[in-house]
Amino acid sequence: MRLIYVDEAGISSITQEPFLVVAGVIVDADKQFKSVQAYLDELVEKHIPKDRRDGFAFHAMELFHGTKRFNREFWSFEKRLEILDDLAAIPK
Image (cartoon, rainbow, N blue to C red; front, side):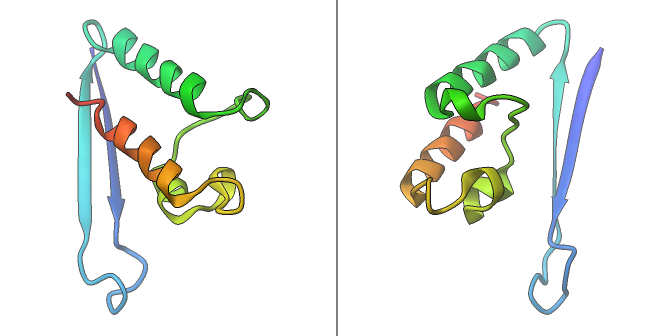
């Protein structure tokens, strides 16, 4: 079985976002899912305070812009970039 995740960015305004970016990831669920899940669980333990873990999910847009669960008042830009770097290491 393969799990596929596809996402896009750049669809709000042609003047502000003249490019559309689409990316996708395919995971072989039988061979890779458990290791990816374990890595994500490790990242939650490493970066997310215990009181904020319930129902938690990483969202790159929130991390980059410092919104919602990654509010700039609580999360420094450097810390948010560190988390994004850890997430970007998943394919490797």
